[in-house]
Image (tube, rainbow, N blue to C red; front, side, top):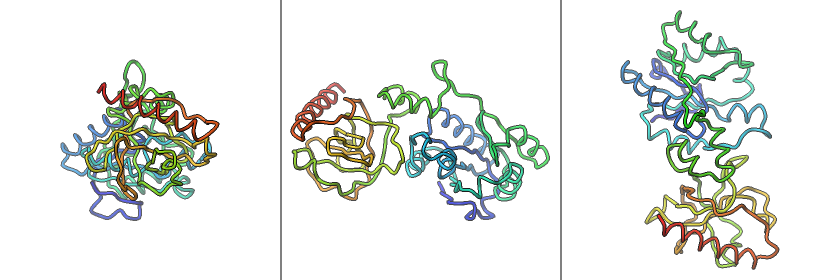
Length: 309
């Protein structure tokens, strides 16, 4: 899959393709149905497939303080999309200039002139252009004059409700990992590079691999039994805490992973953490000794879970 960063990096060879547009946060089963249709149509028309996404998410641009937590950051999104039959991923910078583009200009300048779109697949709630004035009817009208087809994908339902990133966030927030897994079609994961921490965990007998989330807000918090991928002998069993570490007056949200029966230097390694079961909420303890005793209980609870698998 070719990753194209910015409209300015589009070339003549990219013109003439089957396109879908969206945030694709989480790449859940609803998104996967779109990607499946994209691949099928591209093969049928003997054209390249292209997914257009935006960075930052439009909601983060317009209202950063109240934007929903990301299920997947851009790097994670790329990793997941590589598993599907996507030829190109176009990442468009969503800034003031882009947000001000009129809907008609978006269609003419980007879809037609830059991408040479031949078939466009969009979700049932897709809106675009300045003030969200563009809709599927505008696209279909343009398609009739510019010779491209528009497919409006129906809502993908499960258990009588629409599969959506919002629904997955709600499940993660209350620790319903099984629900999130069902909607995603896979267990929920986060990834990142192991960085140098304050090494406080080592002083109480529980060294941790510290991973910055590269998110303004995390969709998931608490203490979990997890599996870690990206290191030797994967998957490795572990206990993870994701939060601000209130016992030590932490401020930044951090993912800390204590690998069970493991003692190797992993600084700088890029890992994926797969969340299996929520053990408890993050909480503040009166002393480090109290925290140490709770971690002992967390580790035992995680071991019990792994033994049952």
